[in-house]
Image (spheres, helix red, strand yellow):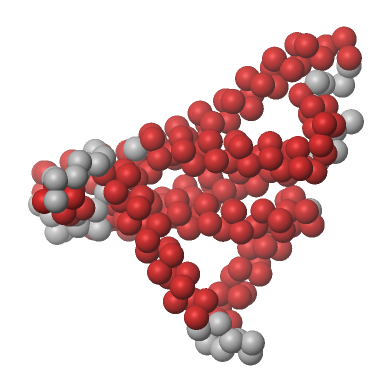
Length: 225
């Protein structure tokens, strides 16, 4: 469900470039995150003060939570998880701005994120276990190995559908409800409760996506028996 006016669409059409909104707004989110990262890194001090203290506590607790799920090896993919969370969260909330569009309300964006998680999951497994990683797909009994291999492959590819459709469905539903309320009751007053709910939903959906990703990563890093 697209907003009636998308400011990036107007900008690109003015210079005769036609790109789908989920692409242009993903680029915008990436640019925002890069700028925020540069600003944050330029103000880091050896002795933290003020805002730096707050963010260090948040990041430290988040890393400890990840380690509680994936073990000490989980610290290796903490940057990936943080980046994924920020990307999805900002992609969710940018659709709440006038003239904005949530890239995660397009299935193309959510499938791309899910494929990245899928590839990184097996990269971690192969990196940690090497050839022995195949044991994760063969089951406990050699006689059942061909059947278990087929079942495990289907299950792993189904994760792409699970991750992408869950995020897409929730964000598309929010965009749809917001668009209907705007068309019925006007731009300013009716959508406010939905926008507050949308902010909460944006955070929860980003959190659910990375939590599931962490579980997949932890499973790939476990020793198969």
